[in-house]
Image (cartoon, rainbow, N blue to C red; front, side, top):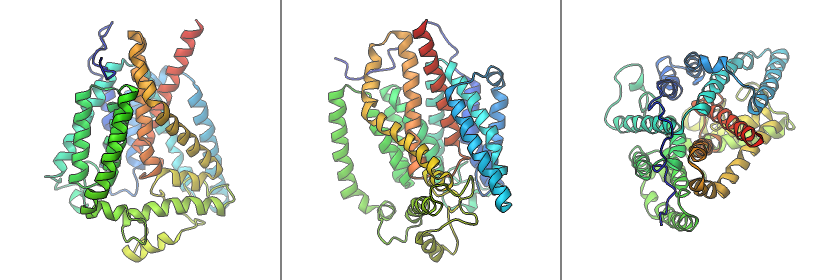
Length: 427
């Protein structure tokens, strides 16, 4: 009996285009350009780069904008935009702060993300998985290249540990990790194992905790491909192996052990993580659940935890006080109860995926050919969305990020796929 639900047995009824250049170009713009602009123009955030990338993606996907279809996720996005727009205008009126109002250019980015989401929605599954896999190969090559080469121009030599075009290894990890979480869920075993192996080796050789966490998450998703009995065997074996690795191997890597020490640490990465969650809680309480307002974290009125003072004592300046260090912290601190609801809804999705992900993946094999391809595409998109948890709960850099852009793309595509299924059932 074949133990794995393989995507390699899926054959095409209609031979689609093998490559979608616009999709590959859009991926490159979203995941590479913002970091390059960030370094070359010495920006304080990825906002300028993601705005430029968004406009270029919108141009590439103009046809999808013209054929735009209203959907449930668009309605929710409009409600959210209304809320943050009201917050931005209130900040302008009450304190004269223009940053939130200027940040409303995020609307352009969201429009581009929705346009790309429509493209993904109508795209053949095999074209999509092929594009994602080969783009992952490109990212893997960039990771290995970074071990031996750093550009001698554009300001990269001034950075401590860049991975061209990324300013640091964690930004690289966020790019490759989110894509890998969707790819290993549905792609061929050999290709998935190749990506996982490279992620693990790069995580150790860099070394980088964010990439190691992504490897563990992607490895967990990979086990979901198998029959339930083998899934549990692999999961338990993997947990035992992870505990052994953490107990007897990681302590010999000072980099990892320092970041996993949550006592009175002197490690900047750990302090920024703790600072983010503390800022979320303190500012939620101090504002009685209202929040500081859109893009107001780090501005006048922000309440700082003792971790911030500790960071200043160690480095002489503040770190990540405007982005919170992770997306959940920023959303909760700025949007208050609304932010808690948004993070809570995403947490519900995470728990649902953990509980049902294996059953979803295993049942795909019994579907008819056409439905199987559509289901595989849906599962891949869900895998991408699951991988976004690192940016939400561990290491993020605000609203203007490639991860947020890609998440909106995924949500729109999933929503249109759901609507199409419902339409077909009612016919």
